[in-house]
Length: 426
Image (tube, one colour):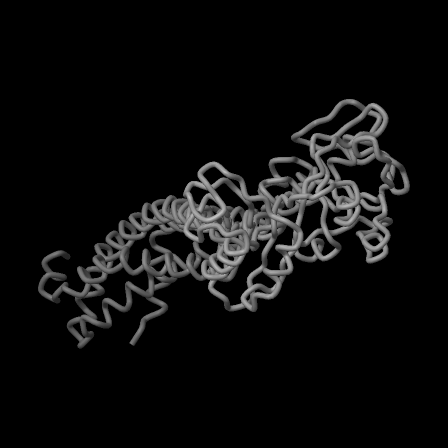
């Protein structure tokens, strides 16, 4: 039988020590839960940033030969051409293939300019990289491509640097756009282009590390109109679902290498960068960081467990006579152990519930702090602490383990008391 009334009476007899222990458990719970929540928020924010843009694509670029083979000698450059895209689109392992090319010209509006040169793309590039257009503007349409129109879409930060009259440009805290640039004309080199859209702010990158907020886009056919025998900057590849990404990249490299009579073994001549695989190291680091934060909180919880053990030993010492009487009338050692284990679980449950409530309140406060607009914060994916079901489950598991560990030795000591020892102690 479980003497719940006696458990409550024993706990009430240790009000001060019990109260301090519950406070320590609550603080430890807040520590471990809040640290895990912060780590989870940071991890999810960076995953959002890296998964957007070209985060799940394979970027195929031309390089320089390091082997003498076929049409290539050491040091000869391979330039990708627009018709290479059609070859890759025929591969069943590739779901989508889109070319991109850099227009080597500066972008200016009156006396203002932006450091990023225009990127020539087709309309499908938008869905491939997850770009979004602010209200009032639009992306390229089939007529823009067919008629080779001189239209342009710019990133939010590029629009600020081009069209804001205020010269105070803060890289960390980007100012708002003073007026809509839609319909205005700017120059790409000496050619006038009409702005048809501004991209929504996005901390992700495209191509070889171009920030989306500073990117500038023109129709691919318009770029072809002004360039003779052009070379691509890159080919953006999205593998088909379920396809081995490394094999898909190798297939793309082999097809292009054979077309130009180059060695398929020369990894520098054709470079296939898998952006998703490059993120694995970073994600493993984030998991390690989150684990480290959790360990710090667990150490705090272990210290609180020592407090539970001390209270339990004091309770057992105070209740030695009662334990002896119960043993004398037939109580088994297992029942005595269960008695004090339940007492420990009640203590740790009260502290744990209080700690989780406080953690939830703290997370809500942090989530509502208005810190948007910071460049570094946006780069991290606008992370906010996330008290997920997984984190709550881990905290409850940690509390249970610490509770059992803290109560086990006092409970075993209590179960080992004999009626004779109780009388001698009395």
